[in-house]
Amino acid sequence: MQYNKRIMNKWIYGFVFLMLFFSCKHGEGEYHGVVEKIEAESKNYHGVTVSSEQYHDGIDMIKISEGGHEFLIPERKGQIKMYACTECHNKPLSKMQTEGEQKAHWDIKLVHANENTMSCVTCHNPDNMDQLKSLTHKEIDFNKSYNVCNQCHTKQFEDWKGGAHGKKIGGWAPPRASMTCVNCHNPHKPHFESKWPARFNTQTVKERE
Image (tube, rainbow, N blue to C red; front, side, top):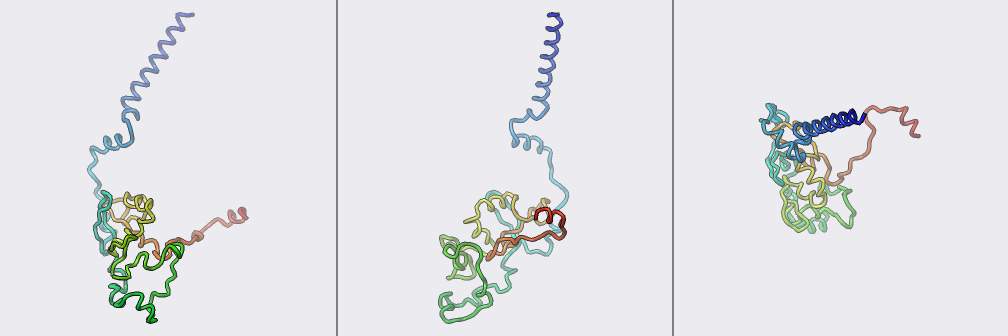
């Protein structure tokens, strides 16, 4: 009886050893981490044959480099109907306001942050309306307006640089092309309003009531 038990234990130990050996050498345990696995599995990767260029054909694009990521974004200034701003803003903003001059967009209501925190000149440069500005009064080109947004929205900016936030133009096919903050969000009122989907289950609505 003891002899049979010893034989059985040897078989069990042998089976466990083989399982551990093969799982460590040829399974998930072959790699010490996710990064190592990605690097190993991608050694023979030579890219894809599809391209995103057909999807942004006709859109003026500019190449940017942010945090080690290079990609294309839509050119912005060519899409602003009344650019350059200095064609109308030919006097200091304070003087235009005191003289009562009315401009087309002076009725914009800023719904972005607390009025004690943000005003028009938080982002727009009153000394040069053809440029935006940072909180430290450095000029920012309209084509790179995301550098205004990233001063407060740092997490979203980091995700956007890496490709996890924002809409892609042409999906993940190279060359990478991404929408910027203002392509999706109205900078004066960036919050998306809640809305029902085009079709929804009315029975579910009744049950929730």
